[in-house]
Every structure is written in C-alpha cells, then in structure tokens.
Length: 426
Ligand SMILES: [Zn+2]
Image (cartoon, rainbow, N blue to C red; front, side):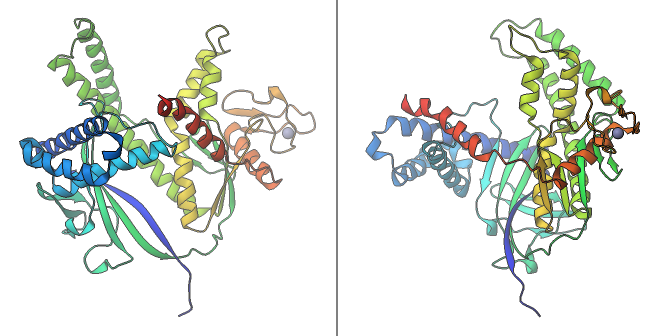
C-alpha cells in the first residue's frame, strides 16, 4: 500500500429526534434550567469584583447553585459545565473583538439548547436501517433518523469518532447535532469539467453547459392556503391586543402553527440545497459563481428615505427571490463539498454577466429582451437563447480570462471589531 496523506476532518451532523411529548417536555425543562443557570452566572459575574471573576470561583458558584436551587438540579452535571465553558468563551470572543458582550437570555427569542460535551456518554447504536438510538443524559434512550454513516461501535477509534453533541430545539422540535471527527485520505484532484453557474430568475440554477436545477414551491397549495388563513387570523387576533400586552393563548397557538409551516418550508429548501450542491460537487471539478453582494442589492433597491430607489417593487421581488434561494448558504455548501472532493470554487466579479452575449462577447444594455429570453443586438450575431444559461456561460468566461474576485474576509473582521469597541469602552 502506498503512503497517502491524510486529513483530519471535523463536521457536524444534524438529526431529528423522535421523542414522545413527555420526553420533549423533560428536555424543555432542562434547557430552561440551563438558561436560568446562564442568567445566574451572568448576574454573579457582574456582581463580583474584577479580581474574583475566575473560572475556579465561577465553577464553585455553579456547583453550589445546583445544590441550593432545586430546579437547577435537572441539568446534567456535564451540561452545567458546558454552560460555564460557553459563558467564558463568550467573554473571550468579546475581548477578541469577534462578538458583543454576553447578556441575559430571555425566555422568548432564545434558542433552546443543551450540550452533551462528551461523546462516550452518547452510546449510539444503529438499531435499524433507518434508525439509530442515542443516550440523552437524564432523559434516556431516544431514537433518531439514521441518514449518514456515523463512526460508532466497532467503526469508532481514536481518529474516527463522535466527540460530543448539542441538542437544539426549533419549530419542528428537538434535534441533535453530533460533532464528528474523522481521518480521511487527502482527495485526489477532481477530474471533472469546469462549469459556470448563474442564479437565475426563471431557473433557480442555470449551468453554463445547459444543465439546470429546479424546484417546485416549498409549500403545497393546501399548505400555502393554510398559511394565508393563519396569517389573517393572527392579524385579526392582534387587533384585540393592547400595546405591550402578552399574546393570548389563542394567538400564541396561531403563531406556533405559522412558525411550524415556515420551518417545514425551510427544511424542504435546505434538503433541495444539500442534494443539489452534492450533485454539482460530484460532477464538476471547478465551479465558477458570481461574487454577489446580496445585502448591497437589497439596500440599493430600497434606497434611502430622501432618495428612494428606482423600480423598487420589481427589484424587491427579485431580491425576495434571491434571498429565498438563500444563495449564500448554497455557495458555502458548494465550497466545503468541493474542497472535500479535491475540486475548487471560484468567485468572479458580477457586473454585466446578464447583458453580455456569450456568443460574440458584445455587451449592449438592451440585450436582455425579457427576464427569460436573451436576444443579441449585435447585427453580425443576432443569437438568442435562454438568458440564465447565457449568464452562466459569461460567468465561466470571466474565470477563463482570469478575472477572479478577491475574498473580502479581512474587511469584514475589521468591521466587526469597530462595531464592538463602543460596547467595551462603556
Ligand atoms: Zn452576440
């Protein structure tokens, strides 16, 4: 066997937990207690003189609070330690200029979560082709959907294992995110062809070689009608609510139903994004995309109050569809999926890709006849075809002539630092 370079890979794998309502409530209780612990810790931290704010003191305070306050005892000891660790890390992030100072966590608007910091407590077993079972401290054995080959049981060793997990609740219920660590042979360079991709208006993804990826509506007609009906009902119920008054139980129930439908649409969208990006990363070696500044596009369409943008309604529609496609997320997915397979992702500056004719190379502003059809105004050419595929070919062309966008990572981190400074000076 020839010696092959190996790379360490760390990634998360998310699975939905199949829990009875009773167990789900138990986890809710734990998560609320963990949040209360964070709040107590934060109050303690602010109260203490600066020289006594140490990890050891905080640890002692947490241990004591678990003895003194009954409802805090439901949090497993490891999860309580994780709260302390995340809290200290939050301050480190703040001092390093990467985040704002930690604050209290409110009951609403806080994502419910719990940490299981050590992998050996999980005791994962695959019990069926589609199901696995995981141990959740102080809750018990819970089933989850088995959709990925995880390194558990005999397949686990020092280099390939699950190092921990995090439980997170969203509108569809509790999920588990495993932290997986593997050692893989370094990928050979990808032998697949080059491709340019355009985020189309009529086609979600148009490829320079004529291929395309499409999807239907994320919600069925029935679900869409239901959503509309729920939104109307919530508007009607809100009329009876006074300013600053808590939402009634009935209104809260409507909110929950709306959130569940939206979460369903989001889940379907993410599923499509994952499947599509995996197919692309398997097929192509080099993928070229436009370096889109999505936030800038949104801003320019709305304009300022004193000088409103042109074509606001139409651009807003375009923006909405761009945001709905969540292109940024897909590019991130493409990036890591390509890197893993030895391919690479290239970003090129965007201007003019929709107005340039990919046949003759002439750019004329009136070239694009409609959103869907491109007709070349050059009398010697006169080519016409699908506008999105044309843009895809232009994107690939920009890469082939060596026009590659420089990542703006450095600039972003400086902005973040500037944003934090006033908070620390206070
Ligand atoms: Zn032309």
